[in-house]
Structure formats: structure tokens, C-alpha cells
Amino acid sequence: MNLTEGTRIRTREAAWSDEFVGRLEASALTDDQIRSLLALRLSEERASRYLKLVEDNPDAPYGKLSLRWARPSTELGVKAVPGPNGLGMPEINIGTYGHVPDRWPYENDTPLGSHPTPGSYMPGPYSVYEKSEVWADGVDALYEDAIREHWAPSTDINWRDLQPQPDDMERAVCQVCTIYAQHGLAENKLLGVWEEKIAYGFHDVKDYLATQSFDAGRKVEVLRKRALANGGGLGQSGLGTMYRAWFGALKMTELLVAIDVVYKTYEVVTFERLAEALPLAVDRDIFGRLANESQRHLEFGRRHLKYYMQHHPNAREYVTHFLNRSEAAMADELNHSHADYESLILLLGGGVEKIEAGRERLRSLREDQLRKYLLLLDDCAIDRLPAVNPGLLNLARRTPLGV
Image 1 (cartoon, helix red, strand yellow):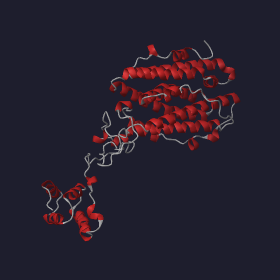
Image 2: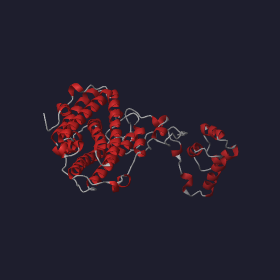
Image 3: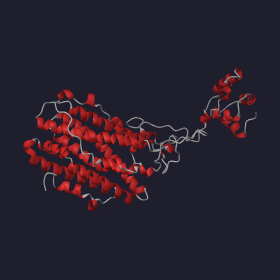
Image 4: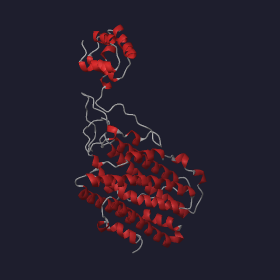
């Protein structure tokens, strides 16, 4: 076998001697196999040891290894440098490995930056191939934040410091825990269902959504534990009318708008206010942690919506429908879920004897939620105030208990 001119040039670049090249040509190895050995940047001494193994064992399978994986059509020689927080996702998203196409071309599990193996192209369960449907700038950094800020309810909450409190306050806290644990279960389930549909090339988004699903599961865990840790117990379930927009989402962006924009705006402000108002330090710690996680989810939703508005050809029309459906479902939940708003009134007021103060603080809470929501949409170039759902607008003006 005579080496091709290209392979011969590569042997000279590898500083392989003419004598060794002669041995290679006299062996059972093919030009293709020798090119693969060269791609592995083997010294002549190491390549010679492999050749001797083949020569001494002519019937063994060693000589039949193709080693073609050593010559992929990908960017080689990449060296990622750790950043201030270690070797994170942003640090490895470099060169071609950081380029995400507007439409993912593969229907199987080909990872971003790799090349599909010929003859083994079997399609996967994916249906979301458009980048604008899922992408958010900086999602890799949000993933790293989620990983670093991980905590465990069983050990990071000082449950032994939980103090007794009046029954009305305890029952109200447990009622709020019940409702938001229920929301967490729905959030967890739906994000998991949709994550499977996202093409493998958008792995940063898939990884991030896995952290949000885990956050939702942890929210369920810590709120159920809190409801059972101080003599209260689980309360009544929420109405669940808000989930109509979640379960009825026909597009990935519609789900993300419903959960990570519309709902999370309201959840963040609620958790932040409870973290300030609740009398027990353990409760303030729990809701402060949950508020921090919800704020990260909201930030992902904001970044995704902004990217969608900038890159999807029908974004403005579609987002109007998405917001209409999500706002209507949430307004129905907030206006008619007595267990939700009555328990919040009691907690924000500080007891049953301070209902009037609680009602005003809940109205103020709803006003802050709506303001935060509208400002977020303004940042995404969406002027929502003229079209916002009347139910959300009315909540900012009055509590459900009064006109």
C-alpha cells in the first residue's frame, strides 16, 4: 500500500522517519487508518508500538480499528480557560461550540458542535427546532447561578428554630404554603413535558430548564415541610384556573410567557413581601430563598421574551395572544381563590384583628405586582398598559373583598 501524497506530507509534519513510513506502507494498515493515527498526534515511538502490536497479532482485531472518530469535522484544539467561578458554561461556549444556529438541523441527539455519525441517524422525540422559540441570551450564566445557589430544605433551613405562633397566623402560613406548593407541582410537570420537545442543540436551555424544574420541586418540598412542621397542616387547594393557560400552551414560548413572565412576576413580589412581613425568622428565610429563585426564573422569561420579540417574524401578534390567555387565567385565579387572598390578607395585616390593614397591604401588593409586570414588558418593547386584563387592573385598585 502506498500512502497518498496528503498523508505522506502529514507524516513529515509529524516528524515520522522515512524508515517508519516504509514499515507503515508494508503493513496491513490502510491509508485511512494512518491518517487517523496522525490526527491523534502520536509520536513515532508511540505509533511504532501500535504498529508492532498489529504486526505481532495479524489475526487480532487491533488492525481493523478505523479510528475515524479521531478526524471529526469539528473544531479541534480548543482550550477553555476557567473564569472567576470555575469552568462554567460561559467559558466553554467558545468558537464553533458557542454558535447556536437559528434553526437546529438535526432531529436526533447530535450535541451542539459535534458531527452526526454516518449510518446511525435515528430521529429523537423533538419538535422545537427554532432558536427563537426557546433561546435567551445569557442562559448559560443563569444555569451556573442556579447550580451555585442550590440549597437543601432538610438541612439549610433551621427547622429547630421554628417558634409557636397564634393559630390564625399559623393556619394562614400553611394555607399559602399549600397553594404555592400546588403551583410548583404544575410548573414542574409542564416544564418537564416541554423540555423533552426541545432539540438537543439548544442544550443550554434544556440544562437551565432542568434547574427550574428542580427549583419547582424544591419549592414543593420546602412548603410542604413548612406546613407540617409547626402544628398547622395543609390547607385547601387553589382553584387551578390559572393552569388553563399553562396546560393549553401550544408553543414553547406561550408556556414560558405564561409561567416565567406573567405568573413569576406576581410570585416574586408575593414571596418578597412575605419574606419581609412574616413574624418568624424561619418563614422569612424560606420565602426569601424562594423569591431569589423565582427572580431568576423571571429573568429567564424576560430574556427569552426579548429575544423572541427581536427574532420571530410574527412575535408581536403571537405574544398579544399569549398575554391575553395568560393574564385572563391568572386574573380569574387571583380574583376568585378565597383561600389565596384571604390568607394573604391575614398574613400581611398580622392577624384577624388587623384585616383592614391586611386588605390595604394586599391591594398595594397587587399594585406592585402589576407595575413590575408592565415595566418588564416595557423592557421587551411591549406597551401592555392599554390592553392589560381588566381583572389584573382592578386588583391593583381594590381587594376582592371590597369595591
